[in-house]
Image (cartoon, rainbow, N blue to C red):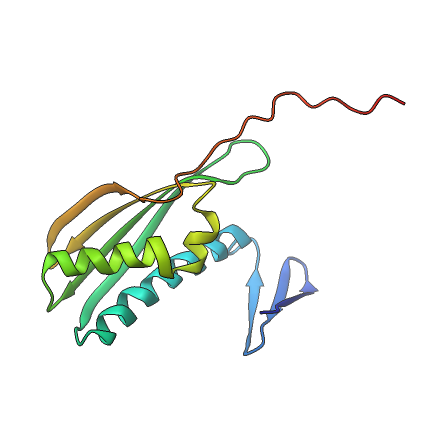
Length: 154
């Protein structure tokens, strides 16, 4: 995958992918909001495709994400909570498996941040809360303390 970002004017940029292009218009939408939107879009795609492959249909899908970030630079994600709301013609156990398959295996963007970000999720399926504040099985937002770094003595 290759993407090229070119400055247009002010704080507007054009992102060109291998298939298309789009405008990044800061501060209307910040790059971190685009990133979070891409992450949510990735898992939402899974929640449509996985059921389809099994002969089920998902309707009224809405996935939202809430992030807590570092106050100081680098302002990385510390925690991410995803909320999945959808209806389907499957039972609750299967619906939960689709979400778990997405967050644990298939969603590349979630799996890119899972070792540095604590990720939890809630699932509302057919109007019922079937999982609440579940933590990912893998990952978990490891935090590493490197201690104080000393410069080289010349």
